[in-house]
Length: 110
Length: 118
Image 1 (cartoon, each protein chain N blue to C red):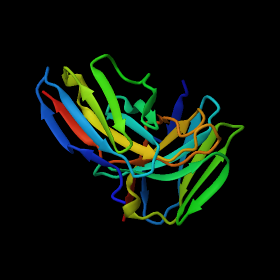
Image 2 (cartoon, rainbow over the protein chains, first blue to last red; image 1 turned 135 degrees about the vertical axis):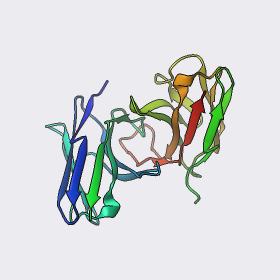
Image 3 (cartoon, chains in turn blue, red; image 1 turned 180 degrees about the horizontal axis):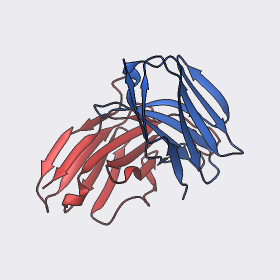
Image 4 (cartoon, rainbow over the protein chains, first blue to last red; image 1 turned 90 degrees about the vertical axis):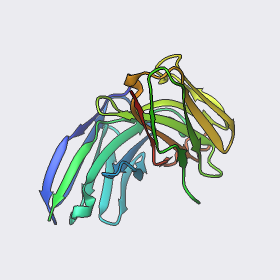
């Protein structure tokens, strides 16, 4: 079973700061997902990647398959980015079930 | 599309009662997942279906839990009898995946059902 570790567990930053959240996993994977969970509880998929780098607006996700490590970056952070960010991995073929990290609770202060 | 629909959104029941959670996936999606989220354990996969067939139910805690997918647009997760430790938020998610090929797609989550067992 894959072990998914995220760091930091909690992060408080000032508006405008560059944010980095890290994720490492123990077993080779087919794809890694970054999810965002809002204070109301809803979960939104931000990225799914199996290699390289993806960018969407102010969000950037990278993955290093050899090192079994991924990072999620937020540029020019804003209070609306405050949420829990969850890393999840899939190991098998096809759209398989995910194994999740514990999440990073991010607070961006104005 | 309305997204993944779950009902009820909140359920409060007493220990020993049967609980049924419902999910309608996004039309055209061929994978459906049931997850559970608790403070202690975070998010965990319970079971997932491909083309209405259960593929992996190794995450189902025990025989009190059962899941069905009678057709492509509906799935249920049933707990009988329910216990206080089953209190959690249960999420349903769906995705489109090309089975047998290395083709992966993002999962779309429903709003969740918050279950409280007294």
